[in-house]
Length: 519
Image 1 (cartoon, helix red, strand yellow):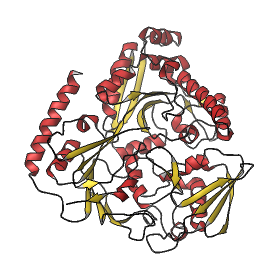
Image 2 (cartoon, helix red, strand yellow):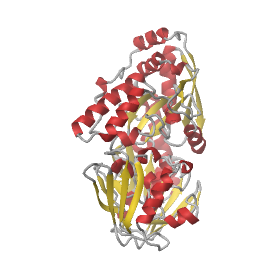
Image 3 (cartoon, rainbow, N blue to C red):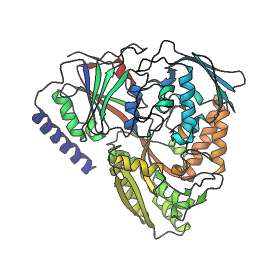
Image 4 (cartoon, helix red, strand yellow):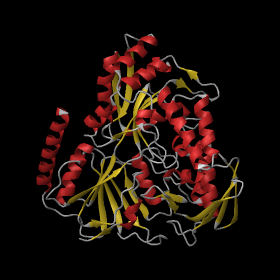
């Protein structure tokens, strides 16, 4: 903890120096929200993005049929209402009328059908394809109605559609344009320009169907150092900031013009271990030649890691040790999960049982940008695993390189921050089923996980679903393909000129559409 306290002191010093250098210059005297963040988007195609930084941009431009609000409830967006048929094999959405895309074209059921067809096309590389595989066909009886015909009663499908990855694109852009560059949505803001790693300019969509936006636009500046972001916020150079580093977010702000918004995060920090190679035929995954293919080795790693120490060192105590399920409605207490308290004696016994008492070498990849705590997590794990003779080498990677390596499953182990969801199935369907889209990233599958996921997808009784996913969570913890660490907090900072922003546990920034400025 000494190093953490020293870091706070140094960060505070940098903040004061930065504020002195910036001086008392105020943000632009207009109705544009000036925002800063440390990490830029890696792409504009909402269907294919996995980086949080990308989703935080695309969700301002595009919209899905439904969204998740600050209370983790699914609420209308482009769809005003929806219902399942009595047999659960059809899901009908009634679309919001009078909505237009940024190019002035009308939003209709044809755009929904085209968007979901694109998501289901493997060539798109959609991040949410697995969640939509129950859709066998779609009907559009009129411009304002879409019927999804399903192969099974897919209980969590509505939750799956409440995602930026399920955004609705213009059918015309899909057919005749390029969704990777033609950012034409229905959302509250239009993309005017994007200069990667520098600045993004958004203007208000004055034809938006919602109440807002109440600002003329948003200017998003990329400032890689978060202490500089805080200094700019203090000096009034910016109005609003995304903050990822708890060390920066917890600096004292008394006597300043800054308010720090703090909301529990349902995303989770995790050490991913790759125990298997998942081939083209997903029914026959094979163990790789790594020690991580051995159950006892993975369990030893789980027992050797002190999760609470990671929270204290990395997040300054700003977090909670978590199991695989982070949503309050389903999460098991961690004392019901395998080896969640550090037990080095059990870890050493498991290593000996596996034939690796003398340890082995392991490489962990970690992004240097998102989140900024990844390297510190890796270094803390490196020290802890040294206690059971595992020699960890850390490979730091820039975000775009990290994402490419992660998507390819090109790693032994990885530090990741993965998104939480309101439903366990939509949270993990793309990892823990045979044929799952990111099966090779998960690096592990077995019959039990596949069976429990499929049971949880179709079960309609809430208590029965909870029991299914309790077994699912316990099995994941016991087989230890990944080592879940903790959930933290989401931080944003704002000056007193900003009002109306509502933090969301998913990290969404969609409430920027409700922000007002009083300069």
